[in-house]
Image (cartoon, rainbow, N blue to C red; front, side):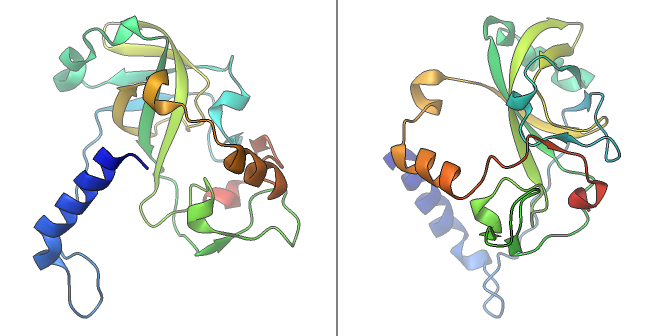
Length: 191
């Protein structure tokens, strides 16, 4: 992990240590996000979605950015790929141990070792191809979010800092079966 990121996390923790509930060990303050836009895609809980959007790179979708945030799109169209962060608003629960779709009985994972949408804070992200921006609408390809999914943030993909070569991660991904299913079409998986 980058030293700069670790420093920021440590600084944030030290600033907020007084906000931690002594009985539960959980921070008392509430964190609130407001959507900046909404995804328009052909996916829904009944049809399912790709395990990761990159597995369906030609699937077209769009992101409607709400009016107050449209000025923030300036120069985003210079980038070919962007990161889209969103709220899994269809998720109703989470569990500490999960079995990814299609995995065998021996493939159980701690939730944080997966990309499952069923999380305590159901935040997802996709690396998508940005085709164009017109009147506050981003025309994209390769997203794995449902129609109507609230978008929380957008950032440019920067290869110099977002791409890390790790033979260990490649090995673990392959050996533990994170590539078992390309498309998740079980509505119960999202609930």
